Amino acid sequence: MNVSKRIAIVNLLFYIFMIAINYSAGSNVGAIANEKSALIQPAGYAFSIWILIYLLLLLWIVKGFFVRGKKVSVYIDLQVLIPVNFLLNGAWVLAFTQQKILLSTVIILLLLLSLIVIYRKIKQNVNRGLFDLIPFSIYLGWVSVASIVNIFTYFVRNDITTFLGIEELGWTVIMLFFGCALAVSFSLINQDALYTLVFIWSYIAIYVKDQEEIINRVTLICIIIMSVTVLYVVISKLSRVKYEVTAGK
Image 1: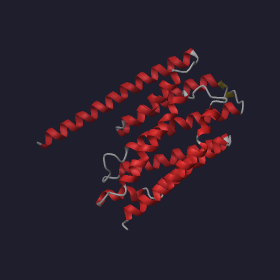
Image 2: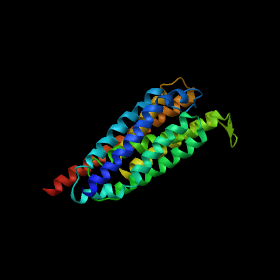
Image 3: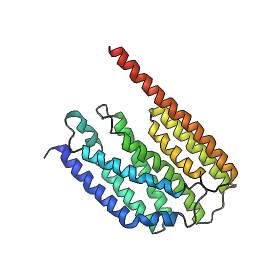
Image 4: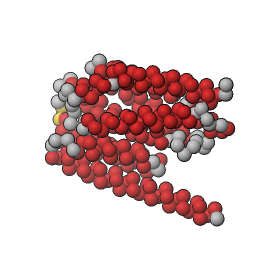
């Protein structure tokens, strides 16, 4: 058995473990999240993005059974990180559904860190395929948003109404702008529109909730800014491809 197949089998086993945890306990996540939700928490339908993330991850794992040559290096680089990431994913579900919010916050930040490292390793690998970054761009985007929400949930559940003299409404506005700036910066630096599209998806889900007027205004402004960024990145990439094709002739 070659290296790529061994790695793919290990990834698949940890993936199955993660899905089993999510299936057995994940149904309670939404109910628990809605018990005393933070202002920044998106509407419930936004969490359906996990279906897309898990489907794309499965396709990426299955792809590992068929890669050959130098493209195997992507899977070799991630052979430890992927199982660790899947374990953290399952651990977060268990911690959150047990309402251990502080522990779940620590775990999701570790999950975010693992995704940052995974994304960077794929990005730096010159042998990566066109599909290799897609699942992790979306996964990283959503966990970035979820990490912010998790932190706010911890404060709300512990009745911490002010922090550094600023109330939840003020922090929500600050973090909405911060998330927007993060998404825009990430997309421009990495030329990655998918990451910001996930933020747009999340911000729309925040906007459609019955929120304070200032939150709706800020959210709408951020959606417009991020949409322009996505359009710019897409046009830039298409222009670059067109130039390379023309130069190749």
